[in-house]
Length: 87
Image (tube, rainbow, N blue to C red; front, top):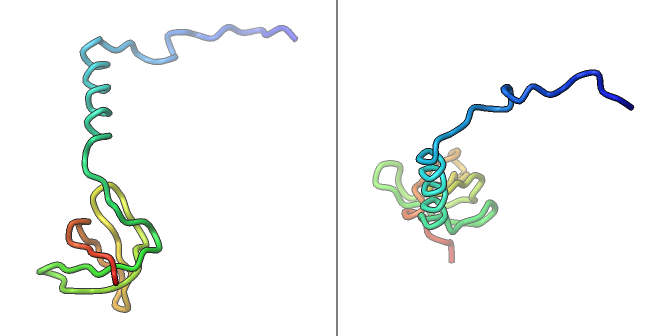
């Protein structure tokens, strides 16, 4: 089937400079080597924070540097360095 239109190449995005491409590649490379959270959703942990206190619970949310721990009192968010596995 023949198409009755042609793609407009100017609508496909703006060109980027070499410096912007290198900066993006460097940023992605540094992200790979940055610290990551060692805990996964479902792990049982103890969070010890001087402001919110010591709480034990289950990890319900995690990203690269923090975890959300669900306890009997609600969900508390901790830096992954302040959380230890429950033994």
